[in-house]
Length: 151
Image 1 (cartoon, rainbow, N blue to C red):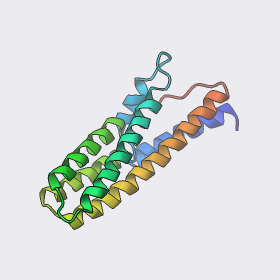
Image 2: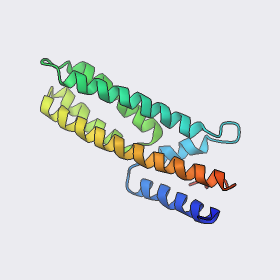
Image 3: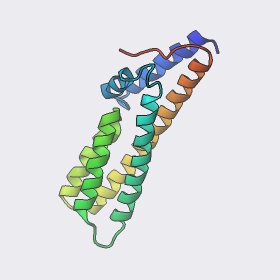
Image 4: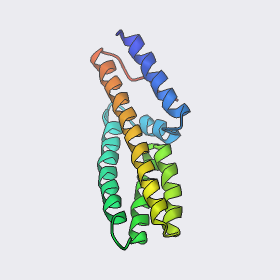
């Protein structure tokens, strides 16, 4: 695939992620912080998000499987996941976390477990999409091009 096609594919793919609400404007703001002095900034921030999210999701699973659920602990983890999702622009993950926190307040274990499944689904979706986006970036750079900006 030639460079122009790769760059168009990148723009189309990123536009679709924004249009579908998988990502929001925060992600494009993150991209704007990346420059020659820090060319891997977005990848590094998103990789940290992936690592933290995996730990939080595992901890949420463990906590919600307990005989007596500590809803304050669940809410603290969900709050942390919501904040990190918002910071990278993972809109749908953040939205599910907002609903999740309501179930924590109500101490509704079944509602929390349902939200946990939804959060995991949305997290895996955004993770797969961002990994695809980063692979496209690598292909563009390998072809000698630059990453098109979305502003």
